[in-house]
Structures are given as C-alpha cells and as structure tokens.
Amino acid sequence: MSPERWKEIAPSQFAWEREALDFLKAELPDCEPYRAWSNFEFVASDGTINEVDVLVFTPQGFFLVEIKGRPGTLSGDSHTWRWKNDRGERVIDNPLFLANRKAKKLKALLESKPALRDIRLPFLDALVFCSDPDLQCHLQGDARQRICLRDLPADGGKPVRPGIMAGLRRREAPGLIPNPPGRFDAPTARALTRAMEQAGIRPSQRARRVGDYRLTSLLFESGRDAFQDWEAEHFQVPTIKKLVRLYQSTISGSASEKETMRRAARREYEILESLRHPNILLIQQLTEHEFGPALIFEYQTGALRLDHYLTQFAACLSISTRLDLVRQLAEALKFAHDKHANHRGLCPQSVLVFSPDSPKPQLKIYNWQTGHLASSSTSAGSTRVSATVHPDFFWEDLSLAYVAPEVINDPTLRGEYVDVFSLGALAYHVFSGQPPASSRAELSEKLRRDRGLKLSSVMDGAGQELQLLIESATHPEVTARLASVDEFLEQLRHVEDELTSPATGAVTNPMDAKAGDRLAGNFLVKERFNSGSSAITFLVEHNAKEVVLKVANSPESNPRILEEFEILQNIRHQNIVAVYDKVQVGNLSGFTMQRAGEKTLAQRLRSEGRRGVAPSDALA
Image 1: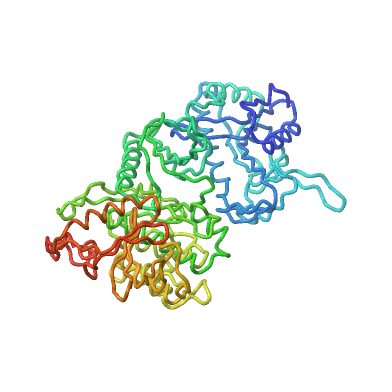
Image 2 (image 1 turned 120 degrees about the vertical axis):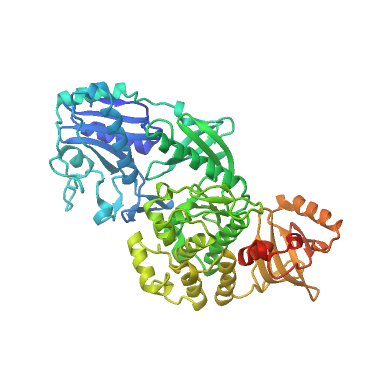
C-alpha cells in the first residue's frame, strides 16, 4: 500500500512488530477503498489511554488488529494464554478482550466527529494477529475465536493455511460473521480518513506523563474501564520503576460516576497509607493525571499476577512453597485486620508476585478500592474510610469466584469473615492449581452441595487438616465459617504439622521458620505469632525457658528494633511487657521478652468486644 492509504502514525520500536506490519502493508491492495493506520494511540471518552497496532478498512470490513509476535508454542483457554519457547514461558490474559474494548472506544470516538455526521460507521471488529510464521498454535474452541495466524502458501504436502489476510480480505477467521451490516466503500473510507484526522490520532506522549514518571507499558485494564495499571519509569533515572494506576473520572460519564472514581482512588490511598507490611504493595503517592486521579506504587519489573504465576508454576511448586504463599497472604491480612482494614475483594488478580523465579517468591496484596478502614478510636462502629456500596464496579468477572457469597447479596458487609472466605478460596487455588470455580453460578452450586470448597474433589492425597482448613474458611454460612484470620492461622499451623517436618538444621531466615524449627542462636520455635511492618514474633524455647522473640524482618529494620528495645528496657510497669536480652539472629537484630498472655489485644477485642477488655489490658 502507498503512504496515501497506509498512514504510519509512528514507527514501531520492535523488529518483530515492524516485520508484521510490513507483511500486512505488502499484502493489502493499493486501491479503493483500502485504508490502514499503524502505531497510534488515542484517549477515549472515558480517559483511558489506548494503543493500536494497526487499524484496517477493507471492502469486507473494518478491523482493529492487535499484533502478538512471540514465537514458540501457544496454548491456553479463552481467558489465559501460555507461550512457551526456548527462552522460557510467559502467561498473559487473552489479548482479544483488551482489543475488543479498544475497538468499542475507538468507534465511539470516531462516530462523535463531524466527518461521520451523515455516514454510519460500520462495526469495528477486533482481531489478534499472531505474526510469527513458525508459531505452533494449540488454541481451540472459544479460545481460537478471532485469532489469526500468518497466511502460508502450500508447501509440499501441506495445504494453504489461511490467516490474517484471509480474515481482512474475505472474513475467513473464527468468530467473524460472513456478511456484516454497513457500507464498506470509497465514500465511507474517505469520511473515515477525515474522522481520524479530526479525532487527533497521533503519536502523543502528553498523556503519558504522571508526575516524574513516564508510562511505558500497559499492565492491566479494568474490564469495566474503572482504571488502568501501567509500568512506568522515572524520567531522570529510568532504572527506577513504578506501577501507576490511572483512575478514569473526568472526560465522560455522569457526575456521580466521576465522583465514584475519585472516592475509589482516595479510599485506596487512605487505606494503604496505614498499611506498611512486606506482603502489601507499598503506596507511595496520590497525584493527578490529566484525566483523573493517579496512584503510584512500588513495582518490580517481571512481577506476575498470582493467577498468571500459578498457571505458569503450579505444577512444580513444593508443598512448603505453597504453604509459604498461603501464610504470606494470611499474615498480611491479619496485619490489615489488626489495623482495622478489610479488603473485601481478595482474589488472584489482587495479588502480585515479586521475584517469581526465585525459590521464595514474595506476594504483595493490592486493589483495595472496595476496602474499608474502621477508626481506631474507642467509639464502637466508627468509620475512618467507608466501603463502597458498588463493589461490583471494581470486581472482575473472574474474581467473583473468590468473593464471599454474603457480600454479593449485601455489598455493605465488611467483617473479617468476608476476607477469610477469600483467603480460603485462594488457598484452594494455591494447593490445587485450579480456580475454585469458573463462574459465580458454579461456585454457588459447589457451596450449596458441599457446604464449603472440597479440595479432595480436585486433588489426590490432600491431608485432612488441609481439607478442614479450606472447608471451614469457605463455609457459605458465616456462623459456621472461621471467624478471623487468627483462627485461619491456627488451623494453618496444624496443616504445617501434617504436611512438613521441622528443619534438621538451623533455619537461616526467620521469615521461613515454623513450629519445631530452630533459629540461629539456639532458639527453638514453639509457635509463630505474626509478622508486622518491620518484625516477626515467635514463642521460642531458649536456655530451657519459654520467651517471646521479636526479630527484624530485614536488615533495614534493625535500627528500629534496637530502638524499640532501648525504649522498653528503660520502662518498668506492671502493664508493659518486660524485655530480657538483645539478640542477633544471623544478620537480623531482635530481643527477647516475656509473654503477656495467650491472646493479643486485637484478638481479645474481636472475641470479647471492647466491654470485655479492661483499660489496663491495653498496654499488655
């Protein structure tokens, strides 16, 4: 095609994409009514930034084409793709969903332009072009819909393989209807060209800046267009990476919808401001983007969503790794609950996995838009950050299999038991390698039939304690469910006893220690209590005496722990625990102290209520 009909808005930065575009450009006829626009972005009426690989108009249709050039073998289902080649494996969401949303937004934008006032724009079809000619595609059924490969001629005994050109020129592609309504002629093509100019389609970078960061690649887009997550790099120090979340709230929609988005951003920021924990994604800034509020989070290049991580690695995870993943989630939730925060939407899509290739991946919980933060004052029921009454606006369809059934019926509910259900459903997924259900309806049927998720139905050899943990955490009736993460962690200890043996030597990292393990310094772990923002505590036996050991969770926290020890050492009061000795566990600082009681204050408040706790107990 000539430059008059093929408009290259910006050159591609990637060799594989340039090759795919050159293939399309060479194969498309250079005559009316053919048109194409490549490598551009547009800002939709909802404020989302949308990148388009190529837009094509032919006598047979109007197409938005998403190019994927990864070689190797492609498999998966209608929701998740798995690429495998000699460089490894990668798991991604099916790109057709995002391409289809882009197509709808672009069509709506073009239809609003004067050039199309008297011409009805035809339907814009989304296609995915897997451009590598040697790709082995094993997608079948619904997963193969609107997916096009490279067209290949007959070769030896192999017949002609129709691909993307067959789709663009003859509509020979899975999922395309043969005769779409609309006019695909020269007058429509010329009007479309003018509409593209009026829409300001260009290689704009103005919308790509948020504060000191440049948005580099789209990581996720909410299915309901509530927000986009971008990987971003610092303008002056490109090695500094962040996750930037853009809430859409200023271009279109009603005033109430815009306010809902602004409240969601503010709610997420205010909740996370009070939560500093190794397994909760660190919030760093609330700022403004051109089209609405933006949140800036810590990020690690290569991090995976938990659902993608389990798809890729579940088959090779050891029991101890699975237990550690569940414990990380549980301890983070316990920390949040002790700070009076509830998540209310915990699912694999709300968990990032840092260092996914390491022997000990680190989980980070995020997506707190539907959460709730109660006041820490003594006024029972007082609220600091209220929960949204429209959580379904932020839940993805896939996440509904992890949401407690009572919240679906009453979005105002916010007890700890809501997060316990989600935690149990996540544990089911971690141990079985499968989501608890493919839909909300299937989950409802399982809960009605089995009174909780039954791990033994999908996993051979599941221990009794593990089955009990998941069934008790996911019981459909709140009164029969584990009431708190404390109870979940207590049952998890029984699971660890059932499935693992104590380490024979000293455990190097206290974060990995469990009951029966021995830490450096001859500390025998009797019970693991909880982890906080800077330390982890254990009940240990040391020199034939039971004491509580509090140790920093990283060398960076050593000064804080030592300062706490110095303060407590100078205080003597009947309602303040006594500290004993300053200790060193490997490269981590800590100290030993007396055990104040069988329950923490937070546990007593949950089980007995505020009236059951004496004021003097608050310091114990």
